[in-house]
Length: 234
Image (cartoon, rainbow, N blue to C red; front, side, top):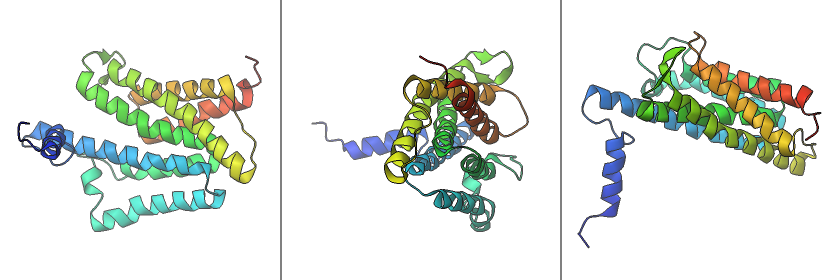
């Protein structure tokens, strides 16, 4: 025994990584803010699992509350500032995130909406984390993004998308007697399409916030496969 407290060691490691408090230095403080932003991104994405059990009206009410929270309540008490990047516009990613989720649940079948929400939450966080740490080789069409971040986005988002489709179909079929929209290989092809389209959209240097493009683009890809591609036999 060396007399060190394991809890203190863990606390110090998390602090050094920028998850507990901002270390000294501009770069470290920026990393801390970005880590905190991505952790919130991931935590809110856990809400996608609830679409397996909530009635449709509760899903819509929850989405409307998210928009109200991010547009009015949190800015009014100043709790939005730690999650904003320097120089962000009024319609920041922080505000557009719940708008995108609300659009998903209003437009698409809930298994597709859940998968797109999961892609948005985990794919963006994976791209950000791996890109900042291992993104030495930049994308030729966007020097602000890296191959490491884009590949990480796809590899992490694919199983999450397929898993959420399956999870949501199971929950809604068990509680509300709803039929599954995708099964077996079709389900995982949809997840791969959603993750792939989302990873490409996230990498593009376009002026539209990627919370919108990634969520709606992936949902359109998966919904399109459900409508037109799932009749293909495998």
